[in-house]
Image 1 (cartoon, helix red, strand yellow):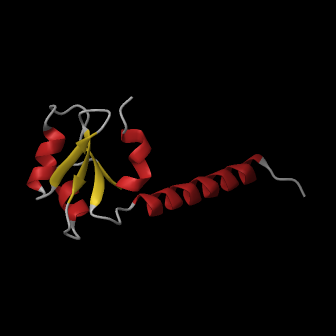
Image 2 (cartoon, helix red, strand yellow):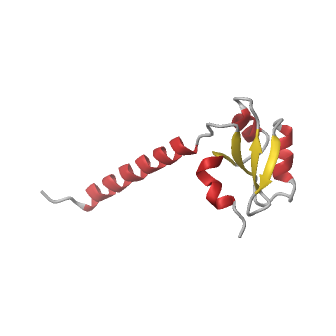
Length: 102
């Protein structure tokens, strides 16, 4: 039984969907420390402003001035960051290697 081009497309789409779901499952913040990504086109202090307005604490900066580590013990911290302007909020363990400056 051979697989047609349409069959390979369906297999590729399903594999991509599974990969995205797995990535999102690991990216969901599970600890009080999160990675906050602000819009890259915004001013330099925007990520700190977002963290502050969400009642969090700035912990450390990232490789870029629009990425930072933040902390809060409140369970809805990630959703508050998103509502204050963060583009992405990730669990800090997932992206820790990307934040180190060389």
